[in-house]
Image (cartoon, rainbow, N blue to C red):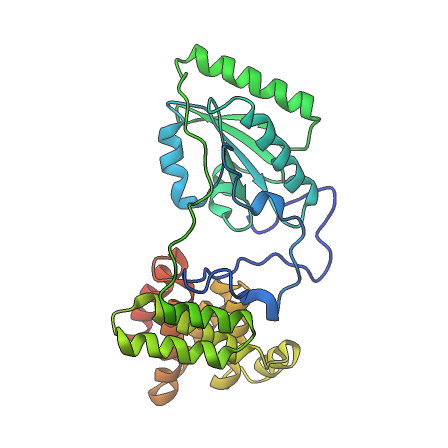
Amino acid sequence: MNEFQHQQPRPAGTAPQQQAPLPASVRGAVDLGAATAPPAAGQGAGQDAAPGGYRREVTAAEVQELAQLSAQVPVVFALWARFSEQSVAFTDTLAELVDRHRGRILLASVDAEAAPEIAQMFQAQSVPTVVALLGGRPVPLFNTTVPAEQAAQYLDELLALAEQNGITGTVEPVRADDEPAPLPPLHQEAVDALEAGDLEGAEAAYRRAIAENPGDREAKLALAQVHLLQRVMPLDAAAVRAEAAAAPDDVDAQLRVADLDVSGGHVEDAFRRLLELVRRTAGQDRDTVRRRLLELFDVVGGEDPRVVAARGALMRALF
């Protein structure tokens, strides 16, 4: 499912974007989408639950765990999307209602555009869509906003149904992470440089960190992020895309568009573009595209399922 319906359609030119995750030493210091993406509407549902809350932000990789947990407590999946401010606000309302039950219900908050697998699993055609799991079995609740009083009644009825099925456990609150450990000095220097907009200073700090510790994977991943930012910041996105469309076999032009796509969160589009280019090129051109793909894999993260799939496709294209 590529689109979600809602009473208020997404404004033109504000397509939702899933940003590539930042390494820990860069996260929070720089926004990869800032050069190309408009501000996202509605921040509440995408933020961490407050200490003592029972809302958990969920990805597709966590669904199986939560299905198992639903044998102990009802797990309510609330699917929202940033283009729908009503769905964001409604998820926040649900979180407040769930918190009142003090661990007898867990709210699984799902960005339906960032986790389309979950939306497909629940056959969601609109946001918000709210479905509970009881003992691994789905219990549809509603697929539109409803008054808070009505939502509270649904939750009460859900708990009654859970008790009838012997599901009477509780869960611990989802607490905000503890204060993170201090970064290594060179990592902190790089983050400070990023916050000041000094990409060259950040690059130098990460390079020194790698020179001191060649096994510093966080520094290597962060350096790949910095290199991407250095490449995309000077670009005129419209001009770059027009140039690439006019010259589909121009390697440099296609690399620039792929960089823009990853920086804006269109990771699969970037990988698809470069994989097709690998298949059409040979010699030095092919190696140039291969090396850029490997660097973008580092930017996104080696465990990301999009990277895993693209890495396999790259191996097949090369061999």
